[in-house]
Length: 143
Image (cartoon, rainbow, N blue to C red; front, side, top):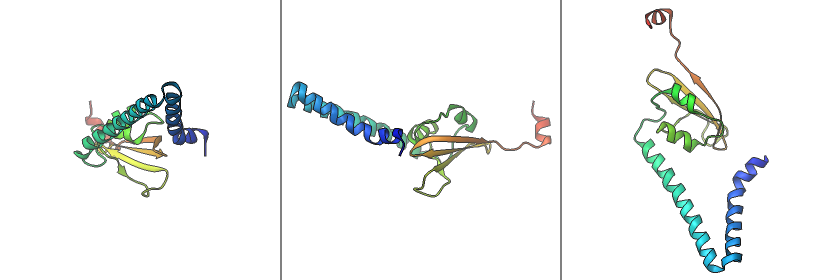
């Protein structure tokens, strides 16, 4: 397991324990109450954001995005699946085996362009934009 994965997995709980222990040492039980209250509030804010993103995504077709080209331009390595879902306001169409790493999701627009994203451990690793091939007749009509 890489150091970054270890930090991602265990860093937040260790930080929480450190904050609570520092609060106890500095302010006693009232400090612990304040620290636990702040941590619970942070957790509720994160949960509320996640539910809001999923609520917005539930009203749209799976794997649909307004513009695959614009999505491709906005993607950055390391983004979470929740962040990409918030950007597209749609759940991605799963293209890999369920619950197996890496996960492949696809978002397509009305012009048959699509972006295929690869997530490993919930983080965006790479992505590819595919655009439909224009034949010579369509290219000649385009301005």
